[in-house]
Length: 418
Ligand SMILES: *Cc1c(COP(=O)(O)O)cnc(C)c1O
Image (tube, rainbow, N blue to C red; front, side, top):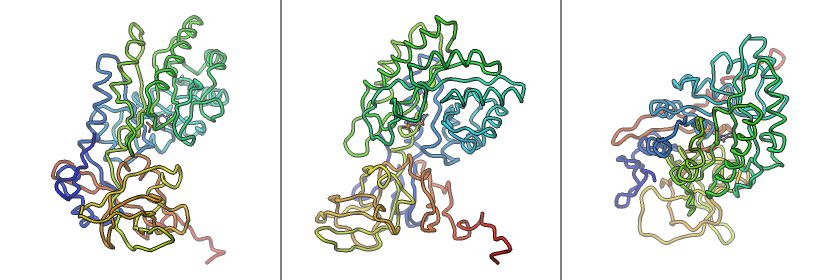
């Protein structure tokens, strides 16, 4: 459910016509709905209201500070994967005791920063990393709270590039090696075992793989208990899908209904790490049609947003609905919607049946709030898009459009090239 709806012929973001936003702020433009963000967060919070829980929003889906501030005010924690994300989360006022730190390649500096900040736990992905965290914690004379990221070897049945929980993936520790790794952790003097974590992939649209993965983890939790290793935090990761095309992913409440009975009488706090399902449908990318070009058997609609602004179609062959910001009665065409980047892979849609649009018209690329702006780059020296947050009738810039000066701001000219 989101708040980008047509009223008559015009697409609105809450109570503001998207066309007005495009005219005021220019394109390409990311537009987010405040109400949608809050609603998606509350869907999780309400679903688990009867059980101790922390909702750690996965920053990598969208790291804009205004969005983080808004979620922090709703009570969100953070799932971070780098020192940079820790910096952003703390800056937004997310309490460190609600921050979990994931990722296979944490550096010494990052570990130090997280220990100094007092994060809830490190989600550890290998024995090497465990030893490194122990070593760094020792030099700081502290104990590092950890969970092990366990790979339950369940196929989430999503796109191979966003599937993470199977044996062949770089993530996590195989469930068959879990006990051995926990025993190692228990021996390390500056490590404190507090939890277990799993995350099997993203854009999951079925309930069964998600629930089955948790069941496998609970079997492990019971085995650990027999070895007097107590788990306080059960982190079930993120990964719930959203509707891009016609998917009908489970709601947080559908998952909760299946999980809560499994957790009854367990003295644990549930941690979850949703990203896409919070922000994905809460944002759109608005772009302007520059040119139409007739190709062999299809039309190219050339727009001012490219793969540098929204990488998902190029990277994962992902589907995003594309719809005119102002609808008219018109014929349909089969088109490739492409950007200005000098790459064949630069497209937003391929062979898509869309309205015959004209030059200068605005198009909305739907469901672009997650893994859109956060994955964007300045490839082809294209400044970053601007971002706007709408709340009811009001709207405000939450990230300025990049400038040409921004493109070169970090460059340094050594004497021998001057
Ligand atoms: C990416 C990621 C998430 C968030 O995934 P979504 O599909 O956006 O919900 C959560 N946890 C970890 C460890 C991740 O890598």
